[in-house]
Structures are given as C-alpha cells and as structure tokens.
Length: 179
Image (cartoon, rainbow, N blue to C red; front, side):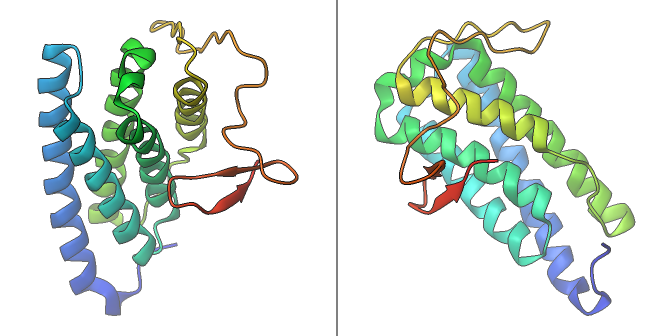
C-alpha cells in the first residue's frame, strides 16, 4: 500500500536516513569481510543500524523492511551477547547480511520511486532465522554458497528459544509465535 501523501516529509527523512545507514552497513561488511571477522564494535554498529531501520520502517508502515531488519538485528543480538559465536556463522553470515542489505536498498529505492515496498522478504528472513538457530545452538553451519541452502547438524534448529507452545524470544525479549 502506497504511503499516505501527508507522510511525504517523514518519507523523505526515512529514505535519506535509511540510505545513509545502509551505506554505513556496506562499509562495515566490506571491512569485516576483508578481515574475515566482525569486531565487537562492528557487531554493535550493525545491531544499531538494523535496530534503527527496523523502527523507522515500522513507523512508516513498511512491514517487510522492518521484519527483515529485525531478523538481521536478532542475529547480531546473539553475536553481541556472546562474541565467541562469531566463528560459527562462517561465510553464511557475510552472505546473508550482504543479501539483506541489497534487498533493503532495493526496497528503499522502490519506496522512493513508487511510494511502496512490495517485495517479500520471508525467504531471507527464514535464512536469517536458521543462521540465528545455528549461532544460538553453537553448532557450526556448513552453508553452501552456490545452492544457498543450510545444512545443519542439530535436531530442530528452527526453535531459538522455547516458551510455552511454539514461540521464540527475539532480541527485544518479546515472545513471537513460530510460523
């Protein structure tokens, strides 16, 4: 659904700020990929960037952008809480965050050009949730770059935290029903 015309000034601010944050994210990703690891400062910065994009997109009623940013934020929450897990994501961590960044940039461009974001991020969110599960369970991920599939060595890795009937706790300590 296109953005309400009365929201145009906020939309311009959202586009500018999100574009700037995604440029910062790309620089962090390139620097981190070059060094083959994220520093604790980089982890915190990626978390902050995703947290900001998530909130701004939610305020603009851009659910797909907000949901994807939240999924990336969840991954970096885990890494922020326990930096020893950084090595567990391997190449998959860089690949999926680069993909998320590209998707977010594409959606911001769409919002700027048409006033709406229409792509479905659910497949990418599922990949991020699988990566979160790998990081949470501390089981090494053998991500296949060409096939873009996860091969995990844990039983039922999709449930990050269990509380009651099929829920998971996200980085914001909110219990979300699993789909």
